[in-house]
Length: 290
Image 1: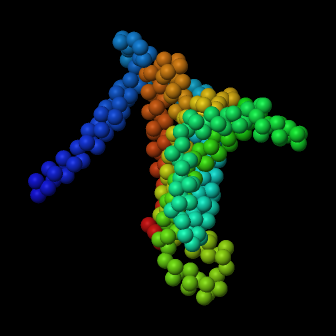
Image 2: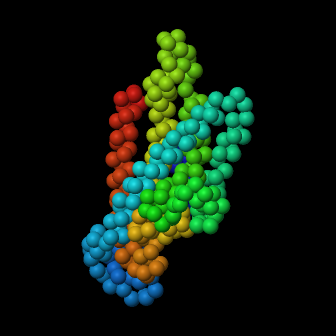
Image 3: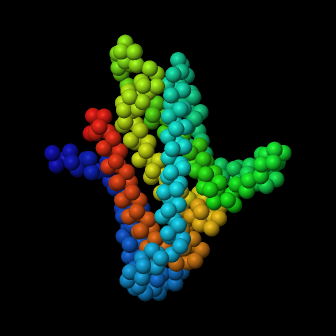
């Protein structure tokens, strides 16, 4: 038994070492720095106690990051759930070449966020062909300078990127549903809409649960698209947790304060996902899954 356990630990040791070096040590170091005034450069810094946390709670950028994250969630999660569910439904209904189409939809997930953001920025610029075409019909939108449109543009880019990935999970969920259930429902005269809402969605609970938790986690980690397109503006309208941490740490050189913001963001993220997970489990329990 001891020998088998030793072999298991040996095989797990590369990941454990990686976790200690790149997760545990930085986490402990960040927690320590959050109580200091370190400026990222000077070797001398002083203990500030809870001053960083008090200042962060009062800061408009941190307050905006809290609300903006949930705004992104409200826009991004429905977008990506609907689009990935639609893609999964189409692919599930194909008679052949399902894998090929899944790969095609999955490719955007592999694309660089920087590249896709720059392409969208060019597409939505004032003199782009797209905006010139819209102006012919009297439609003029400053996409990245209006709070609502800027938020929706960023949410749409991320939804486009993750649709194929989540569709892969949902397609696996569709494939796992026993066809006998649909045959029995057809005999009972169940309509297609009733079949989808009363049979398919409840039986897709494990896949939907996974996709929802993953997409909610993504909402708390948005950075690249915001950094490239809006910089957190206009007027903090797209200022996410990651954007605020970056600005405080690398623009304002307030690493101690940025660490405090990161700790607050971690607590908010953990608490939010825990609450949402409990709500999803309640839905699953009503359908006999939990």
